[in-house]
Structures are given as C-alpha cells and as structure tokens.
Image 1 (cartoon, rainbow, N blue to C red):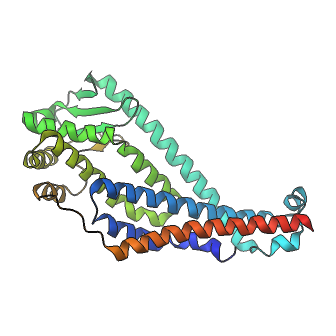
Image 2 (image 1 turned 120 degrees about the horizontal axis):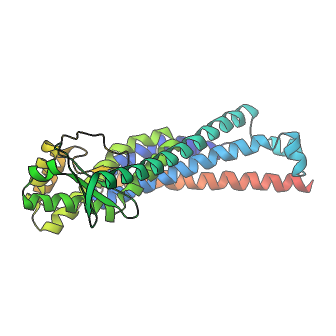
Image 3 (image 1 turned 135 degrees about the vertical axis):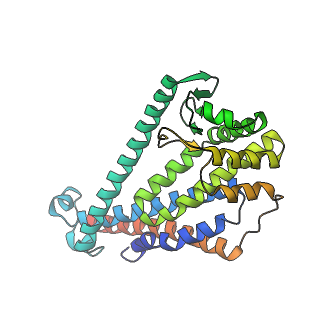
Amino acid sequence: MIVAVWVPLLLPLLAAPAARRLAEALAPRTAAWLLAGSAVVLAACSTAALALLAGAGALRLPPVAAFGHLVLPVVGDQGTVPAACAATVLLAAVGAALLRTSRQRVLLAARARRAAAAAGSAGGDLTVLDEDGPDAYALPGRPGRIVVTTGMLRALDPAEREVLLAHERAHLTGRHHLFLTALALSCAAHPALRLLRGPLSYALERWADESAATAVGDRRVAARAIGRAALATRPTSPRPLAALPAAAGPVPRRVAALLTRPHPPRTPRTVALALACCLALSTACALEAAHDLHGSIEVAQSE
C-alpha cells in the first residue's frame, strides 16, 4: 500500500494539464464533461489516498487497535507515523474546504434568487431588473432564473436579445452550475485541479453559445449578440457568486468560434491516451491501496 497510495496524490499534476490540452480539441459539450469528470475522479482518488494513509496511522494507536482486535506489528508495517499525521491534517483541511465551498454556494445562490425576485419584475423564467447598467446572467435553482437589466435590453436589438436569452437559458437547461460546483469541490480536494477552472468556464460558455446559435438559426447574429453584450456589460451591482453571465471568458475567442464553420474535432490521441492512463492508474492505485490495507487488517485480526 505504501507505494500505491502515493500515486493518486501525484497524478493530478500530470492529468490536469493533459485534460486541459485535450479539452481544447473537443466540442464544447464534450470538453465540459471531460474536464468536470476528470476533476471529480482525480479528486476522489486523492482524497481516498489521504483517508487510507490516515487510517493506516490510526490503526497503530492502541485504542483503535484494541477496538478492532488487531496485532500492532502487522498493521504498523503499512505506513509511517509522520505520513499518517500529515495525511490526517490534509484530510481535515480538505473536509473543511469541501464543507465551506458547499455551504457558500448554496447560501449565496439562495440569497441571490431572493434578491433578484424582490428587486425585479418576473415573467416565466425571466427577471428584469430596473437598472441602467447593462448586465445579464443565469441564476441556477428550482426554478432557475434568467436575470437581465433594462440597460442590457436597451443595448441589444430584438434578434440579439433572443440570442442572449437563449444563451442564458442554455446554462440553466444544461445545469452548467453543477459542472462548476463539481470542479470547485474537486479543487478543494486537490489544488492542482485549479488549472481546469479557466478551460471549464470557457467550454460552458461555448456550449451555451452553440445552443443559442442553434436556437436562433444564425451563427452570425449569435456572434454579434455575444460581442455587443460583452461590450455593453457595465454591471452597477455585484453579481452573485452562482451567476453564469453571458459576457464571461475570452469573448473575442468565443465570437471567432461562432463565425468559423464548425468542423469535426481532431482528438490528439497521445494526449487522450495519457489522460486515460492517468485516470485509470489513479483509480487502480486507490483501489489497490484499499485492498492491501483491508488484507492487512484481516491478517492482524486472525493472529
């Protein structure tokens, strides 16, 4: 176990750059799933590795060993005390970060929905705020809301407004906030996964752009609407943390992508193979470490 348990802690340093490189070559929807899924797998395996290291150290404590009827010398060979202590501290920090991130996102999203409902006029899934500063964003929830200011509505023509609303509606129907939440929790578990924040945000915006272009049936109108909305955006009040704005990410790159004829993505096989190997190896090593620790416990109990 002592060798296998370290692999899931180190592999995110290699897997995150590979996932980022691979996402650039994929369609937006596929890229978003790849980035979020890879982050969750890597974070889960690294957290499991910390738990196994901490558990192996805890089994060396006389009260824990006595409770499980273990023989200390047998279990004690599975890990060192310093590694177990460090893993325990890191595991506690990960747990605190996960709880803090979850609580922050839930509370701020609920507060933002209440504030939007109180400050604006609602119709269907749309809330219009009487503010001169042009702004628009999607607020996830049950139900999700599209929040747009009167300033933004005045800045766009009717066709561009349709694109803007379709873009924000795509964020809600695609549940893009869950992708961002999954990555935020993964980053709390392993700092190396923060490298995926920018690529995931871009992939989700491109996903919504393509959905909006399909909804209006004109990619040039969609590109013009995204560009004008980004240039016009001047929020007069801070956006909620959970907001998914239309003017996020590298807008010129998004506009260029809409103006370019879509073509089948060319997946770099070497990078894809490297990422697949990282994910498989991380999962296999975490399972192997857990199996070894379980086997050691059974041996200790039988003596």
